[in-house]
Image 1 (cartoon, rainbow, N blue to C red):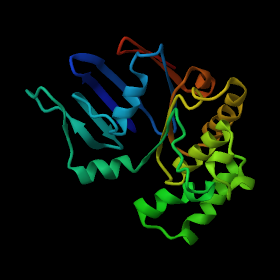
Image 2: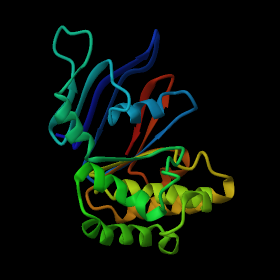
Image 3: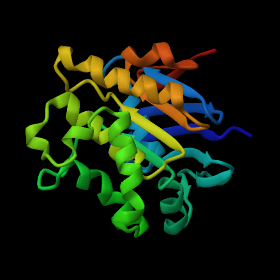
Length: 231
């Protein structure tokens, strides 16, 4: 059994079918890039995986646990109990096209907030990891500044550290450099490539052409369909 299974995924927005019978499996520690033209369903697929969008057809299985399935004879997928879905989704971290940092919080507090709120951890428990992550993304000296004082590339590196603070088993990157000026994409790409090189049985799934060189395989989307290019 694969670490992640997305089987026969279908997704509609009104009458528009945006994902058409998409199946993708990933093993533990694997890195996969999802590539394709704008509007082909890449971002929607990632958002379905972590339940930011709900699938209409198919099934999602993570580490052997069913998040959503489509019973025989049913026209629509059925999700597991909300508590189970939340528990599975907590194993995932996601970095978006936009940085979505809290503007009223310092860099350090942006990283500490999710473990505080979601896991109920104390700052003394989280701080060593937060400092380690800031070092990993090269922003130790920015810990006490606010997002308005950062460049776009720095903001995205903070967003990466924030996602990693939850110690996810799976990391999803939705075109993390697309909102950056060309001269800033390199620093974010280098950070993500370093994470891929340092991974310890984490799964990484990218939606961005420029990161494919570190991938164990590439998944092509076109017109809402998936075409395997996996090695």
